[in-house]
Length: 146
Image 1 (cartoon, one colour):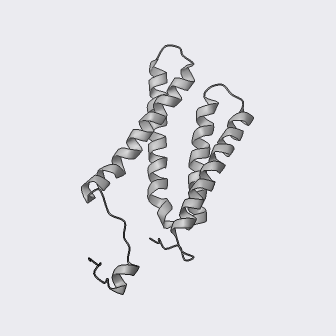
Image 2: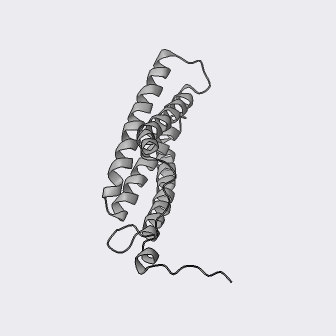
Image 3: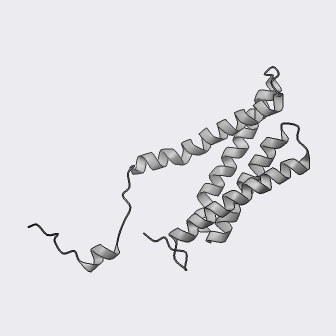
């Protein structure tokens, strides 16, 4: 009958998640993810703004400027948020997503109140989800567990 070999106490207490991707892939993702998300957001904002009409130069300019602003803000939050305590980290994602969704919805011609309400609603949902994730993956001092 086969038995498992005894493991040292250090081996038992240090569980690590496997790193599926290498360092080069992570470095590429640091640049590629904000760029791709920014382009998607800019295209979406420009499409909302033109209301199904023809694509104009001003519409393209608006889309690219919006994409640039969103990509820079997303990259800043993505890089700076891990250094913050979990409450401020969740708040930073709340602000980014709430403002982004509110701005997208305002391009459809909706009122300021409905755009703000939708931004607050979506941002609050993201904040609750992100805070729960950080709360369950960190100990009381804010160090990652597991």
